[in-house]
Length: 576
Image: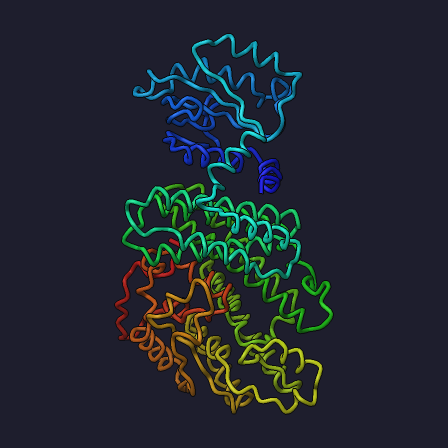
């Protein structure tokens, strides 16, 4: 375990990685963090300002920590503009004199250099010479081995990681080289740790420590995924963590305060950083003709790969909009950056569609999940015309696939049978697809963009091409929320309408759809929607293959009829 920690900590960057770890470490020692790392703000050499009992002598002190990446050597001492010696001098001569809080001025001061390398003996004399100039202040160096030992003792102790859990975690690290690894061991580990959280106000301190350790485990898993050049697997690990931590929040709503929510936000931040790395690699591929066909030996694999990346890109954009919503009225600059990321994702989705035409012949009915994610992102970024174009193209290509090759979305999503149908043309020629929720959903999107022409095209598709196909649509119920975060919520919960018949008149169709939305929308009471964290439901849908709730697109239908929608205003999907 120490080898894993050493490898991980040594790889950390100074900004937002090593400094965040040191900050969490101080919290484990029950230090009060007066302020932590603030990018872009002048801090006079101090990265972390904390107050607490020094573990060495149990005396209450002010800890002023400066964090540096790499070895403590001559280059880091005086060899650059960010060198240690001028930073330390600035701490002593400026920060200590002017920036200490009045209530801390009588406390002993300890300045710490925290770095994730080794101490070079050649700079030892410089260090001693400097510290002797300020006898009233204590100095200490936390090198890589020091930090590893402290993290192991305080954040990986037996209360959180028993010997059995450590064995399980080592197993996870070993398996991360396999891109097909399902992270099942990681799920078991998280469930085990979260299962030990006590839903009591008196246990808040210990619960927060356990949540911080979960975040540490996630960042270690992510770092190893990145070394294997597999950000896709890292994103999945983030999804698992987000959903399981939210499950704890959902089940203990009465205990959750800003501190708990802050730990959840930290997981979202890890996810955001991984997402940016993933997008930097995948968005250029979207611009290449048949870019996702590489290493795909057949059309089915090509389709599966393309849909997976469509879902990941679209969900990334939606999550950026979600974070922009969370930070609205707090940080306008950050909000604009997040929205710009979302628009880049939307453009990436359009490029993916344009350059990978195989996507217009979905092979599995549940690929409507990815289609919904893409259409939601395009709608929220103002690209309604693009949605219309996509709906028409889906209509045309699905019709051609069914008429000429009897290829259509497999309702039961049986991958083995989908492959068999692709190569066994005799079986495919006689195959009855039976039902479709994908066609139902695409038809309803015509109401979202308020286009009667698109609606008419889908009526013709059903009447002329899918004559014997049963149109269905799945709805969640009150039991769905308890299953959503750890498994596919259907068919164990919710209900499925079948034999759906759409009226000939478009306006009548919109009224019927809105009326159904008013009276069949159990999900507006789900905790993540009540707290405007609508992306959580979409993460769960993509990860565990639960169909996207109709609420997500039906609430976007413009209500110009007499239907009264009385759902709470704070459940609306919005980018503000």
